[in-house]
Length: 269
Ligand SMILES: NC(=O)c1ccc[n+]([C@@H]2O[C@H](COP(=O)([O-])OP(=O)(O)OC[C@H]3O[C@@H](n4cnc5c(N)ncnc54)[C@H](OP(=O)(O)O)[C@@H]3O)[C@@H](O)[C@H]2O)c1
Image 1: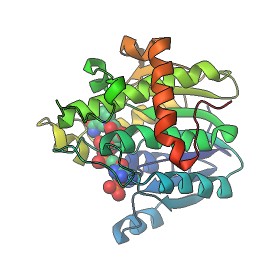
Image 2: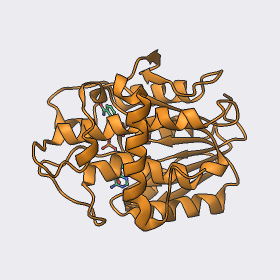
Image 3: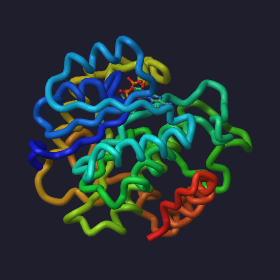
């Protein structure tokens, strides 16, 4: 996929893998729309140094209405989103915590944000690439207790479940898209040195540029990638849970309930 003259939206573009991806994309994309948590002075300096047509929008994914507001702002700046990279993410919080919306914070930032943004832009989307994690492979979806309120909470467990939810959502979404004009895929970007990695694991990781290169390669891959999961740049099998139709339906019903207060229904046709 040639990104010249295309509009690309990248969330979580202010740090780590997203920031390195923004650097890779700047100047080779028609219109680059970057998202960050807040317009810190350092972020504005970084953005000023990027070439090409760049728009910056901020939103805290810990607030559902801000995610919906971000979608509205994107709609105001782009008639079509040829590529949406849902990259923003956070490590699991050490202690279970709720967002401003009363939803477990990791689930909201890492999973619901992607559903809200993707749903609110669905009539304008081309390719959607959701940044998941290989941690999803060993996770379990607690469908009756997605917020992990009933006990057994751990930071890594909450993070891995949020990523399994993303991969499951992506598989479900792919089943509703035609795979030609619109498609959805998910990927593990690699084990990458970043604030997020250091927040959960005592391992080194590759530089952010490695994750960025993986994202750009998958994002620009020729042919349809609808419904696929990539381990770095290679197609791989996701957790079988993600491909189970009954699990997908149940997850989406519960997701619709969580998002009802902001009027977003991902299951609506
Ligand atoms: N690093 C790895 O080894 C690894 C492995 C597998 C998957 N991933 C995934 O790759 C993606 C990028 O991770 P990373 O390692 O690059 O992490 P990072 O360096 O911590 O960057 C995370 C990005 O997400 C944004 N973000 C965090 N919380 C947010 C919130 N509440 N609202 C809006 N934006 C928020 C951050 O904005 P601020 O800078 O303003 O906080 C930042 O731009 C994540 O989805 C992560 O789960 C990473």
